[in-house]
Amino acid sequence: MNRFFLVPGFLTVVNRMCFCAIVFYTMWYTIGFQIRHQSLTSQDLLDYALNYERSRLVMQQLAYPPWSSGFLYPPPNIVLRLTLGDLGLRVSGVLWMVLLMGATLACIAFALSLMRLSHHPAKYVLALFALSAVEYFFEWDLKYLNGNVLYLASLLGSLVLIEQRKAIHAGFWLAASMVFKVYSVVFLPYFLLTRQYDVCLATFVWLALFFLAVPIAYFGLEDAMGLTEAWIRTVLSSGHSMNVPLELAAYVMSWHKTLLILLNSTAGKGIFNILDLSQEQVLALTRGAQGLWAFLVAVYFWVSVKRSQVAEDSRTLLLDAGTLTLFVLPFSPALQPHHGVVMLISAMALIGVASDPHQSTGLRWSTGCIVLTCYIELQFGPSLMLRGVGMMATTLLFMAGLILVRACLRASEGWKVPLHSQRADETRRAIPASAVIKINSSAG
Image 1 (cartoon, rainbow, N blue to C red):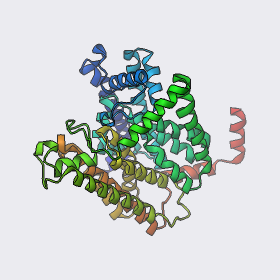
Image 2 (image 1 turned 90 degrees about the vertical axis):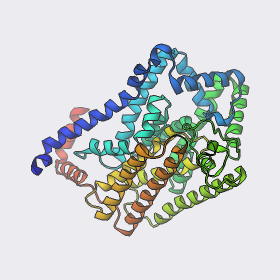
Image 3 (image 1 turned 90 degrees about the horizontal axis):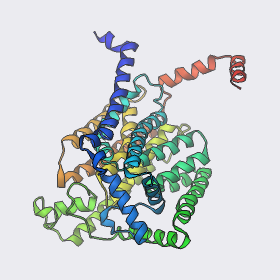
Image 4 (image 1 turned 135 degrees about the horizontal axis):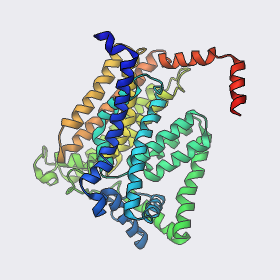
C-alpha cells in the first residue's frame, strides 16, 4: 500500500489535483463570490468600486481623504484605476477579477521558481500547503477585489527577472509594484547594499516614468504636482497620528490599534482591556514594539553577513524578500487583512525548506510546524477586534522561521542543489554540443 502512494503516476495525479484546487480557489473567491452575492448585477464591486469612487473624488478635489480611511494609493495608481473605470465599472471589474486570478497563479509560479521547485514532482502540493497557511489573507484580497496579489506578483516577477540578469525588466516590475504598494521601496536599499546597481538604476528610471510622467500626462503639470504633494503629506501624517479608526473592528488590524484594544479602556469598548493605559502610553509601547521588530530584522541580516559561495542562490533571495516584506507590516498604520498576502513568500520559503531532504531533520520539522501553526491560528484564532493579535502572532512566527533557516544555512554549507534540479542539469550536460547546435539552427 505504501509503495502505491509513492509511485510517480499517483504523485502526478495528486499534483494535478492540487493545481486544480488552487485554480478553483481563485475562481471561488473572485467571480464565484461576486456571483453568489450578485455584485456583478448591482455593480457593487466591493473594494474595487470603493477605490474607484475614491480615486474619482481625489481627481475632482485634488486632495486625499484622511489617512484613517485607508486610501493611501499614489497618483499613478489613481490613474490606473480611472483608466480602467473608463471601460465601465462592470467590464473593468470583470477584468480586475481575471487579473487577480492570473496574479495569484503567477505568485505561486514565481515563488516555486525562486525556491527551485519548478521541476519538483509535487510542486503544486507544496504550493497548496503554502497557500493554505495564508489562505485567510488571500480570501480577503480576492473576494473583496482589493489588488494586493497584483502587488505581490509584480514584486516576485521582478525577483525572478533579477535572477535572470534582466535588470531593465526587473526594474520595470519593481517600480510597478510600488505603484500598487509603496512597501517594496525597502528593496532599493537592499539592492544597493548587495551592489546590484543596474537594478536600482533601472528602477529609478521607471519610477520617474510612473510617478512623474504618467500623472503629468493625465492631470497636467500643476495638478499632478499638487496631488503628489497631497499624497506625501497624507502618508507622512499617518506615522505620528493617534487618530486610529477604532470603529472598523475587522478591517484595520495595525499593531497600534491592536495594542489600544488590549491596553486602553476606550478602544474596543473596553471589553478586552487589560491595563487601562492612556493612548499616549499605548503609542509609546507601539513605538517600542516596532523598534524591537526592526531589531529582529537586523538580527536576520546579521546572521547572514558571512555569505558563503552559494549566497547568491535564488532561495536566499526569496528568504531575504520574505524578511523585507514582513518588515514593513508592523509599521503600517492602516494594516488590513489583505495586506498579509505577502506572507506567501515566507510560507513558500519555509515549505521549501521543510520538503528539502538535504536539510537537517530538526530544521525541516521546525519549519513545517511553523507553517502549520500559522494555518491553525489564522483559521481558528481570535476573531473580530482581536484579529490583529493573530496578525501579530503570524508575522512573528514567520520571522522566527526565516531567522532560524538563515542561521542554520550559515552554520552549514549553505544550500544544496535539489535532487530534481541536479538531474535536470545532468540531463542537459549529457546532450552533445552538436545536437544543441542543430536544435538551435533548426529553431532559427
